[in-house]
Image 1 (cartoon, rainbow, N blue to C red):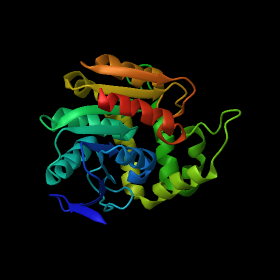
Image 2: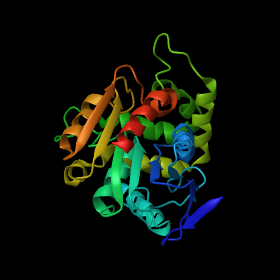
Image 3: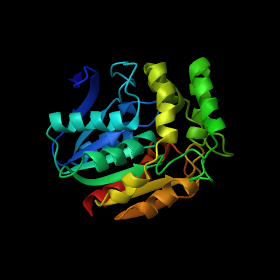
Image 4: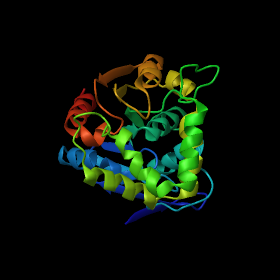
Length: 273
C-alpha cells in the first residue's frame, strides 16, 4: 500500500502502476481512485504509467478535518507529482476531479504537464449566481449537504440512479456498479464529503481555464443529470486556449464506468495525437 505524508502531515493513499508516459487520474465526489478501474487497467495495458490518489478525506487517505478546498486539493496533487518526480504528465479529472485538474494545471503544473482532460467536470462553475444565472440553484447543493450530513447511507444509494442514468427508461441497472459507488463513498469521511460540496459547487475556475495553454480535451455527456452539460462542459471548452470538446448524446455523468469502451477510445486518440 503506497502512501505519502504531505507537508501538513496528512497521509495520502495512491496507486502507481507501470512505466511509460504517466497519466494521473483525479476522481470525483465522494469516491476514490477505485472509480478509475476501467481506465487504469486499460491504459496500463496500453503501455502507460497510471497513477491515481484518494483525495484527502476520501477513500483510504487520512480523514483530516481540514483542507477540503480546491486550492489545497491542487497543492496536494503538486506534492504527489513532485515526490514521484513526474514529468510530461497527462492529467485526467472526472467531475470534482476535473476542477482539481484545471486548478493544479493553472497554479502548479508549468513545465510538468503535457495534456489534460476534463470529463463531466464541474468547470467553469456550477452554482447559480449573478455571474452564472443559468447555474444550479444553491438549494440543490443545500439539499446535498443535508442528505450527506444526515442520511448519507441511503443517499449514497439513491444518488447512483441519476449518476449513472439508471433512472432513464430502458437503461439496464448494474447493482454491482451501484454497490461499488456506495462502497467508495462510505469509505470516506463525512466531514470531507460535506466540506467538498462547497468546493465543487462554488469554486470559479474561469480564470484557470483561460490561462491554461496546453491541449485540453473536454468530454461530457449530454444527459448528465449531476453536472449539466450546457452550463459546464459546453462553456468550459470555449474558455480554453487550446481546447477540444466531445459531447455524447444520452451519456450520463458516470460515463467513464458505464461507457468505458467509448471514453477510453477517445482518450487514447487524444493521448496519441
